[in-house]
Image 1: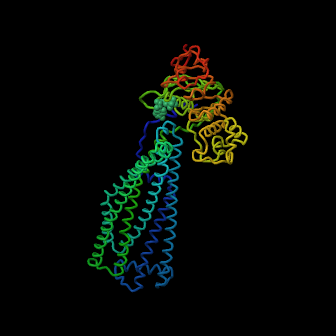
Image 2: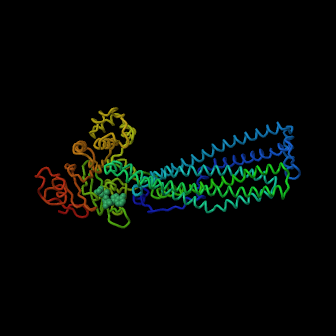
Image 3: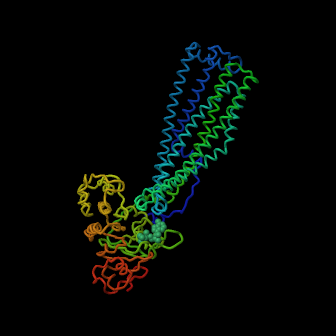
Length: 633
Ligand code: ADP
């Protein structure tokens, strides 16, 4: 045994803020995940750059052939090398041969571009898919307490919108990378023709980009605002849709609509400000470009007196170089705008991982033979503040039905979570057959449990698929038995396609009682050692409650049942009843003993609910318990 306790397995820092969402951490993650493909894409970019350069250089012999003056110096040198290259491959330097080679080289360039584009998209999609996969893994593996403290929409938002934005940013980065390579080709060719003017143009381009530093930080800020506002929108939408019935019954659609519109408008404002910022940057770059271009032309013609062909080619190159600077800054702004989303995804992932239930190297088996026991257990949700459960001792005997009752907020569900090992006690211990429930036994223990919650959770799929989800290898016989035991066989048989009927979103085509019985059948299909019913009948009308009650009664004696309820009529036949108040067990006994004395909290609760149907129930004194849960009188 590793000696690792459940407390160690679940213990986590309350909040781990990570600083791993910056550009470098993003780039290194990209390199780690997609290193080989990124290297290939870069190599392809270099090839693109070379083919582009060669294609451009071919313009010179072309111009020479057309009759332009290439003069002396660099231009003549380049034209001379081009002629030598043609002679080397045995081609005459004619208009047709130069154009033929140009077509071949540019076709190669476009083929490489297609390859690089495909690769860029593959990297972008693969990186996003892996990121989403890792994030989901972290969320699935995190402990229940951490999960339940966060809004589900925070996770949904990160898994969908945020990862999509990272994906888009990655695409922009690859576009930028390809642009950078092509820019390099332009610069090299221009440099060969006129180093001085090229250096001046590049320098001006760089100064122009640096002049946009403020605009880039606005992009980053807008990216952060977008992330936060989108998260808010996801949260609101999830809540509104979940509570649509209540919203409609309150006639509160307009209030919801107004909240939604506010958030939606904020997102539009974020986008508008981001796009305006981008457009202003573009305007500045465009005006700057024209000024640089005019200056460069003046220098080429009036100061350097370069030949016509050189001026023409350089003019073309500068025309290409300047917008390339513009595209690069747009790509960079898009990446910077995406980084807050990446930081958010990494933050949620890191916090989920920090609170993960760790993999256990040697898991142990658990078989319940005698009892589950909570021994002097205390649990508090907050580091400071009132305990939800305080010094509770209770025993759940195998094969018996144990009920935990109490008013709302008494701590009943917290006890169920403790029994299931979803949360750990800060004091005391949970024991299975006198052995502490440690991390190594946790998975096996949960495998022994059938859990039916108040809120039924059904997939938008067939009845069969909903049942098989709990136990994928169940046979037809086992499915039918589970349905019968849960008193669900009749209504399932009456569904249009019986077990093949697709249940609507969250099973809306079934009544609450039918959903509960299906959830019970699903729990029973696992043949659990312990069936935990957490307010499983509290939403039901009396007819449906009676049906479920009948099903549970039929199981009584054959299976260990923990029934958690505030509805006392449902636990009449429980072997032991624990009455919980403010997180403490205040009474324990069976129905008869608890209602016998004419006084006591259980009796009060019964009277308040009209749960006493037989006057004879009220008799001798109810059993009282001390803080440890043992009877004291
Ligand atoms: P019951 O099931 O009897 O209604 P619970 O076990 O749900 O009671 O809650 C017991 C106490 O713990 C309540 O005061 C409740 O507000 C608090 N509580 C329950 N769940 C959480 C949670 N996830 N975070 C913080 N407090 C909680």
